[in-house]
Length: 285
Length: 332
View (tube, rainbow over the protein chains, first blue to last red):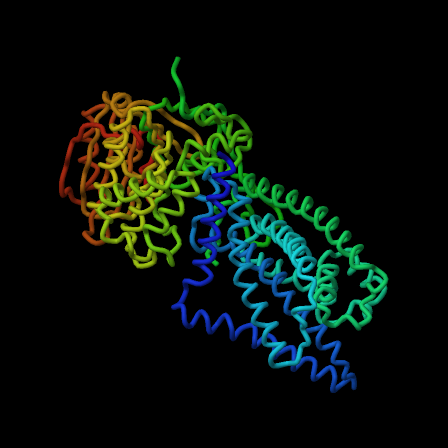
């Protein structure tokens, strides 16, 4: 009974998320927007690389591939963190539905997961567009037949679970804040962007930065993606001594640890919000 | 043994608030103070009180949106602190005066989605949504986006969302706030019929409108400053002041109404200025009818003139004024 209820809540919250993602305009402009946005992001990377190469005199194309694939997949981190906290803000302050969802017998966790899945689907489309643009127009050497797809799927699954658990923790904290939750998730995403080897390899960070990078699961997730896709792997990432299997173990265990912590933070945020009367807070933002 | 849908015991809820923005010192506001309320299953129970009286706070606690500071509250036999999930299976809530709903979805999509979040079987959900759209006179809007609806239509859709799950207990927080006469009437009739159709259903209704409480409620609690001042049937509440007289006067507008408060024998007094007509409505609860003469003689002394005089039977509003010491509106 509970299982069937959860399935139903998951299905319809995913549907709701998709409607809110896509229903703001007609299908044609939505498709154009969905393709143009990631391509624009890719072109920003090209400009950034050109400037770095121009100033530093480095023309290591491997570095560009490293940046390109890392940034493409980092979209999942940025979008999921943003999306999951936005659900709380949007449902509470904009649509004023959060209180009705909260007092319903449905599992709020499941609802949040459903809403996040729709964000993942939209982001997946953006990542595919970015990678395809890179392969066809920017010379990113992705050998589709040479990819270990099984490993890639496992890595993606664990990595996304990890990102979603981070999002859940932020959602718990979002119960306690008003519009500031946007700054909070941008801040957390910024930390990941800086320390997880997205825009540059973590080997160029100071020692303490490398130590911090090595406890963040996103670092291993992006490294594993690069390895499975065989893109940008010639770069010194300070993770060369860690085998793919060990990286997978580290990613899995750290994901479990962060997921447990995230559930705890979410429940604490929920409890504090209920104590303070913030579940249906409207701040006129 | 009486089964209670709601049972509270010494229920308190405090909020810590900053009096001045940026000031670190917080003061405590007692939104609810030792509230003891029992609502029987099958009862349509009303909570009457001015803004800030504690009505919405009580509803929020009972529907598991807010934790109490102390005391206990049970809903359908389950404690609000520890058994939220059991409570949520049996309740629903509708708040008035707000524009909730996903504006990008149609009315039907919104309702369908919520029906699924409540685990309603698909066929039942579809049938009930159609039926309630019909009752609420919203069938022609079923495929309209929620953002295109008027305030009244949105509130009707909100009512359908609350009632379609057929809860054992529904909380209605000022459901007719801001609606026109016809929409209010439709909603009141619907609530009345809904209760009649299945006598085990329970409603907790908060309202500003005395007529609404008088028309609908089996019992009414009058609440002010977080305290329950009285709780009984409207008839019994009116009997509380039946030995007293209620007098309504309309006079030419005056600036100072203080002389009326100090007339001996005036038990309670409220007033309302109407700048558009240049008049002031005075309402008195008197210990004795003989005091009417004293009041009338006071009016010329204040430089005013009588426009109309009306002696009324006590209403729920009179009871409210007698207990609270002022009317429902802030300026009274």
